[in-house]
Length: 304
Ligand SMILES: C[S@@+](CC[C@H](N)C(=O)[O-])C[C@H]1O[C@@H](n2cnc3c(N)ncnc32)[C@H](O)[C@@H]1O
Image (tube, rainbow, N blue to C red; front, side, top):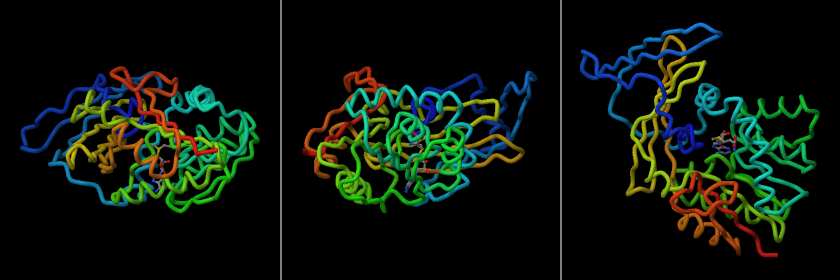
């Protein structure tokens, strides 16, 4: 997950106003000093962080609820939650679906699920994180919206011919170490769509990552600072990521890894799952997937 451009690491271009990590006097020790504004005051946080060689994440890193809780302010700032309204408009324009049932796979805090429910869609939001689903639930409750929230692993969802539209947004795909599991998710989505239904998959494509890759970046918010480290592995097939969160007294490190796909690779996986027409775009606005692409957005349509 790169912060700015979305996930796979939400923030590849987020080298912000913080000092770059500096080598301290104690070998691998690194002093990170950040300045961040908090309620009108400027706070200075200085923490000593040990920067070791990056190690790989566990295969089931996504099951660590602490990661989603701790990273929430960085991953889902207000502006990103607000952006979902516009993103949903773009998705509807791209797929030309105006009503029906929608499956939001790995819905997180329900940004898109809620926006779709507001527009009259019957929405099912699936996520493995109880913490994020609670966020989603309270958002829907505040707006008096009825959404079906399912606390489940995305691999377990299979509801034959139920949905007009399925979504996997903000790099919520490619998390399983065994890529056959990722393919299985696509197979289930295809099965869960009605004939003529569409699937929108939004991620940071490999071509974009190759263009903007930087091994270290950071994101600063009023809540704190996060340093991101990234490593491409397996011949540009996977990415190891490390987030060092400096929020409280003690820095916390989280590691996660995922597959990175080229447009061609993910198109092929969708076709294998049974999607007939598969188109790639460079954003939810539908720009071409070329040198200017901001995201890899793939739209697959199930045969009618
Ligand atoms: C980057 S967030 C994106 C959330 C949402 N799609 C959005 O755009 O705000 C990735 C989401 O994937 C969910 N997730 C991770 N592993 C999962 C799994 N195995 N099954 C279901 N959800 C999972 C996380 O809990 C998190 O909500």
